[in-house]
Image 1 (spheres, rainbow over the protein chains, first blue to last red):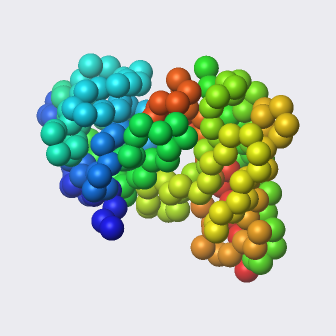
Image 2: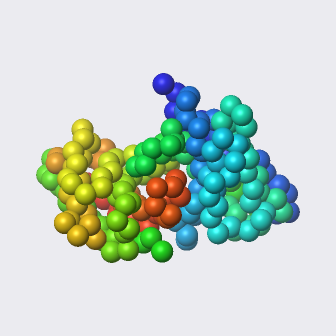
Length: 114
Length: 111
């Protein structure tokens, strides 16, 4: 069974540009959530999608957005990139609908903003 | 706000048991305690989760205090491959998929 797949794995962008990251969840998983990991702030929740609807959102500015497609694949977008957006962006998927259900992470997309 | 407190780092000798503590005094009555670990250059990996009673799986055991304000992850025989950052996690709001990660415990396993 394939795991959570994130693309691209590594990318470098310039300040002011925008970036789109993609996530393919485990087959059958309908919930997809996104996290940002930096050395200073650790792992922080960005948002979670279920059935193409955003269910929860973390404390990030509006430059961070996401969406989910009907096949449960998800994308997140960061506009007007800042140096502080350099981070590992992690996607996680879950069956959802069951309290206590676990989430499974991908290997992440490493974003460097220069 | 959901919050967990863990020691920054711990060391263990190979093939000895390891007890990783976590305090979560703000836990609600219905929320599970989750443990994940993160190996270098990888995404977090599920270890175990529990609600009230102790839990065991092939990777580890989870001992939960009676008042649920603390828990301990037990690795029965540490191996070099267990060297990782271990996170004790709550969800906020409970029952959602919004995981609140603390700073975690960096486990070093000595050969």
